[in-house]
Length: 75
Image (cartoon, rainbow, N blue to C red):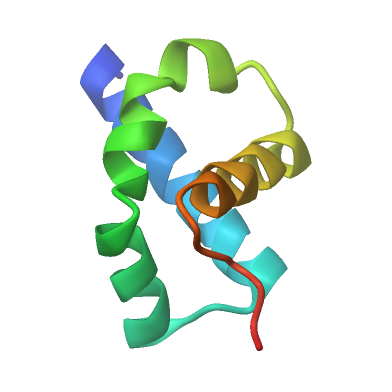
């Protein structure tokens, strides 16, 4: 598996873990991904974050969104 494929697989895995943890599905999650540029964030931080467990990465992702004034928590 090439590096780009490894990154894409990891990003998909983290997105799924985030969806499940925060119970965000469908259009609601797609809008959050676009609005907060989550995929570029994950790709740009892959070298550091892929060493950590899923809980750490999903928590870090929630902090990243919160820093931009958003939230991954269902209200």
